[in-house]
Image (cartoon, rainbow, N blue to C red; front, side):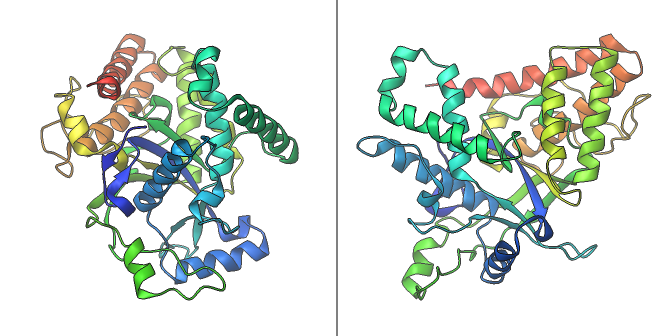
Length: 358
């Protein structure tokens, strides 16, 4: 597992991007609503701090003897309680929104995917056969108990941002905010938090400004619907129809007043800068015929535009270029649309290649 320096606990986080859904409290059972209000009042972990905690828990589980699959309990020091990221209410509606982490469920799904990507004879080198068999049984039981089969609130991708995720947003959805450095989890029931506890959980590095894309669920669903309309006009392997349809079904599972977030701070600006300048031209203010009305500014990667961080520019340009490429497809300009999407794909293939660099 790769790590990079970051602002979270321990200074380490996975080199990954995250697609998260934050649901309003009314989407949760009554007893959980009270819990989330208490967490929000006591200063919850930021998204980057939570990502680092996930990464540290996964490393501990993998390094255990014998190795095991990470669970929700690894995030809460063995205490059975919900864990998630709180999205502060906006002035527009004043709703508190929560993205549950659901570590156990995500780990079981990740292990299932890992088994399809590796030679079966090699799998025991990572996890004992008994652990893998028990995890498969747990996943089967979990799926049978749930009415939703589309997945948890969080999706992650190592060393990249999938093109389908970029199609969920418009450039106007980009948010930049400065995270507070003193955020820490609330004291657990029956435990009086001491100054030593607070200091232990305090970030070891001062948080940098966090860049992300954040969109109301209605906007994200419209973006996916437009993307689907585009690829139905001109099917392309760059954005497979089945992948977009599955993503659309996943979004439909959540409350209509949810928010969708693309968090790419784990990739880091240095990684994208090393990938070299983008071949995609500067983003202009106009959109091609049939586009989703994207607006934004920026330029090639490394140009120092749109916030000055290479990672920010790469993602912002990619969101804009995917939007324009899909607009070209809908307008019947298939060659131009495929060309734009291909350049974005090539950019992220180059970034992803760093995973195997020595």
